Length: 112
Image (cartoon, rainbow, N blue to C red; front, side, top):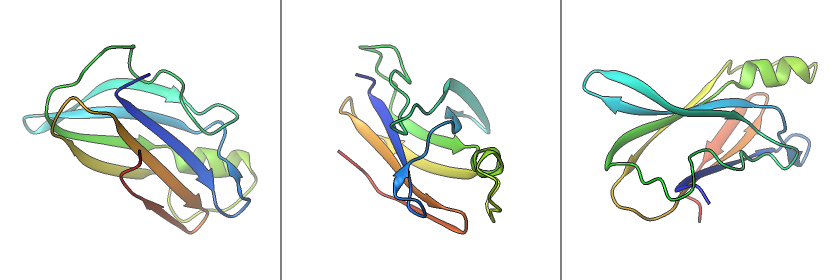
């Protein structure tokens, strides 16, 4: 399993958000470097965001979710064209970044 995982649930429908493009980025100085990207599967997950046994360095990271494209494909208006979640990696443990999403709101938390 990837050290960093995500899961997206569309809370308006109560179903996983399939087909959401996302990318994982690391802050390097004043810039952001893309480490991985993917598209959520039918369960709202990206199976292998990072290669197995790959550990990222401690630092600041972000997940960028292309929510505007997702809602457009669902024929639904949305207020947020993308969602950016910034977080810190402090050690080699597993980090789960879930996203609870609706057309006009979202929330996240440190998952397990």
